[in-house]
Length: 396
Image (cartoon, rainbow, N blue to C red; front, side, top):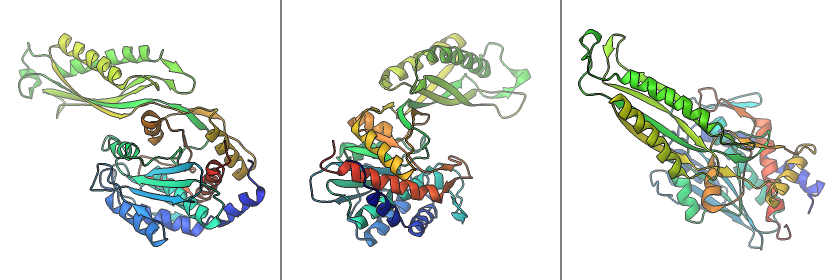
């Protein structure tokens, strides 16, 4: 049923801007590199417990940083909506929080402590408003999201252990469109080796292969492979890709090095087999090793499988109505999702509809992260409105 204007206004009035800012600053103030987010998860758990929420701490197979799970259950029939966020940050020097006008800056403010705090504020609003007529809200927060330091398995374990709703909202920093498809991701690390130690270039054994020449051939082969992959595309998810991001060899300009290291990514369309993608890549690499007379060791790090969202799902319509109610009638277009996030896990493991929608923010994976306070308020409003719609026992 349509959202009543009085309900829209009531929920907005209950979003406490200062409480929301304080929550973001509190979370950003605790360093939490991926794999080391235990302290910030403890802080969130303490905060929610002090506010009267019943907090669970499932480990998700990562006991050094147990996740946070809160269920706000009306005790009446209806569906469960899940708000899910990660509190770990990439491995960069820590930047403390600061508030300047409409912006909060600091490590994780964009990716994604700000968005997670907005989801927490939506949970508070729903409890205070009494407008949730049925069903429940499940809030989850966790570690081990950012690759390559994390493998996503904490969230995957939480999902298989039953910490999952009937639909999910994820407050990552994307809000110009509703992403309906996204690619899977694998990170690859390669070491090309030859026999013998490093030597001066003039002492180079003439019968020894060059690891730099082998790397050049591998890069050329990957460029050809990328052209082939570009033919595998779809409008909602772009195309499959292979990317070389780093190459390192030698310690000085006139040294004949014994090894060369390369690192990059491989992205594939939703529905593609992760195992088949890896096998194809390994075969390509080993062909280059055979041709160049080198040894090539490949480390393959799977990050996420692909993602897809049914744009005709009732949950999508309800989210659109909530977004329009909070945004002067504006609905969002559909589009691709350029990065991997937790939506990929919910779709591939549980076929749960999941929407990525977070605040205006920037500087992700840099030292200059920021998030808009005004837009954090808007996200909290949109999330609470969506929950009222989706959890209603009379909704479709």
